[in-house]
Every structure is written in structure tokens, then in C-alpha cells.
Image (cartoon, rainbow, N blue to C red; front, side, top):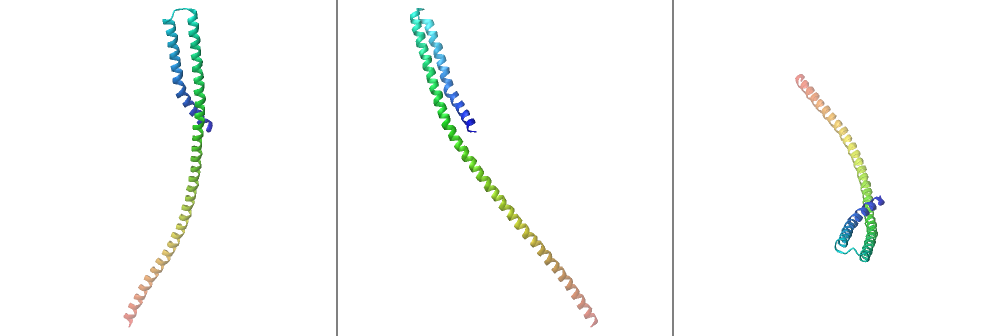
Length: 154
């Protein structure tokens, strides 16, 4: 994972920093050769010196590019480490949140079970009280009926 991040960052930084320098050095080299061929006389000594200076310029550009690549890789390493530390922190926090979620889920399950038990107790109590009320109503009707019969006889 860390290598993958490093490679992406290094590739991006190298392409952003090296590509313009390569293009500019190529264009300067072409312009230099064109100027030498177009405006200078074809004397061998002057042309050799100019080609030597051109080679020096190419060597300098190469060294600059090498320096930029090394610095870019160094910066990519620093940025990659920073991202991987951020990634580790995110992973740790994600694990903490998952544990908290699991704990909360367990608490909800326990509470739901407790509430279900209380509901069942209330339903049993309700059945008992309704059953008693119905018996009381029946008994009251029976008492009234008996009172009516006694009053008719007496």
C-alpha cells in the first residue's frame, strides 16, 4: 500500500517537474543548432567549439534533470510517509468506530430483549385483568338475576 502511494506521488511529481525541463531543453538545443548552422560560417574550428559548448549544455541539462529527479523522489518519499500516516490514522479511527457501532448494536439488542420481556409481562397482566373483569361482569349479572328472582318470589 505504501509503495503504491509512493509510486503514484513520485510519478506525478516527476512528470510535472521533469517534462517541462525536457521540452525546454530540447527546444533550446534545436534553436542552438539552427542558429549555428544558419548564421555561422562553416569553419571547422568554430563549429567544433560550438558543438563542444552544446555538449556541455546537454550535460548540464542532464545533471539538472538528475538533480530534479532525486529531489522529486525525496519529496515523494516525504509526502508518501505523510499520506501513509494519515491512512494509518484513518484505519485506526475506522476500527474504533466499528467497535463502537458493535457495542451500540449489542446494547440495542439487550434493550430490545428487555422491552420484549416487559411487553410480554404486560400482555399476561392484561389478559389476567381482562379475564377478571369479564368474570366480575358475569358475576354482577348473575347477582342481579338472583336478586330479580328473589324479589319476584318474595
